[in-house]
Length: 411
Image 1 (cartoon, rainbow, N blue to C red):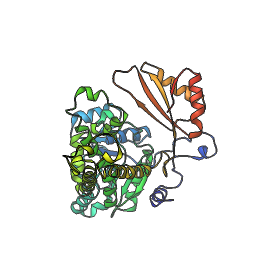
Image 2 (image 1 turned 180 degrees about the horizontal axis):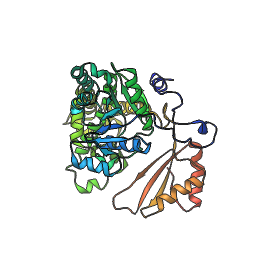
Image 3 (image 1 turned 120 degrees about the horizontal axis):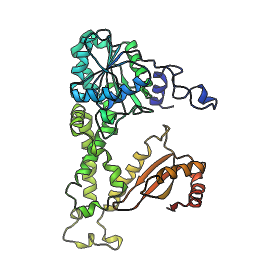
Image 4 (image 1 turned 135 degrees about the vertical axis):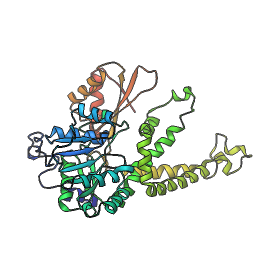
């Protein structure tokens, strides 16, 4: 068991895992246990995270109060059933969740500690060191009721309209309890588990360094790649395939929110960007024709190996090899080392009902879908469905789908 896996096990209280006794004995999914979170819960900030959390708590029967500086966002969350707008005279919250951007999270958390002296206060900002330090500096003894946290969940769309009660299901939820009372940490741990997440205890700096590498820097790189498309001719964009769509998917994220996130975690992010810049410089130097001799056309002409610029192949191979190694370390869908899957490719007509029929046919073939992706080309009447399955199931699935009339594309 890895150190991080051990932390997940140690943080969660007994008997509140993702599977219950019915699952262990083959009796199907266990009934959802009653919520351990004690209400009312006051959620300040009705954006994506705040409203999604409110929805899952309300579904578990926990009373939720809402606050937001935006009347429109607040009204939308209320109308979605996320809770009631907090008013004077309402019961005091037992837990306050600050779901605001990181540049104001500390200020709001300190205000909540002062306004609700009996409540535990947590924030869900994606920056922890700066927010936590400011809360402890300004809140004094009340900071013992503050626990920083960060659910590793989100999507490109923002706002209450994008909220989803399943947003946190199966996702890590980091808990930073530096200096907090044990009861306060337990309250936030219970909140994470009631939302369906897996609590993970980290230090503030450890968290910020980690998210800089797995979240903040990738967001900026995705945006940089997407920015290269801004002036690309339409004819070139028509050639866009799944590769560019995968790389630029998160480039559709909210610029204002991400500005606050990156500025709040500037130290770790800039360090990674400098390392990335060094790698880019080395790659450019390796493959750039000018690196050898711009007057010597033999290094830019196609043909024999001796006509390739010295160092070009090794520069490309090195960055690709290191990329392969890094990608292989990303955990699989069940955690731990990623599993190798075979991909069955099927052409799916771009018409209502066909994708649902494909999933039904795969199920009737007795095959479990481990992962799924869909590739579309502009102007085409069909998409390419890529179904990841266990290697031993690939050939039988291809045969079963072929019998059912699907056009299977053999890789």
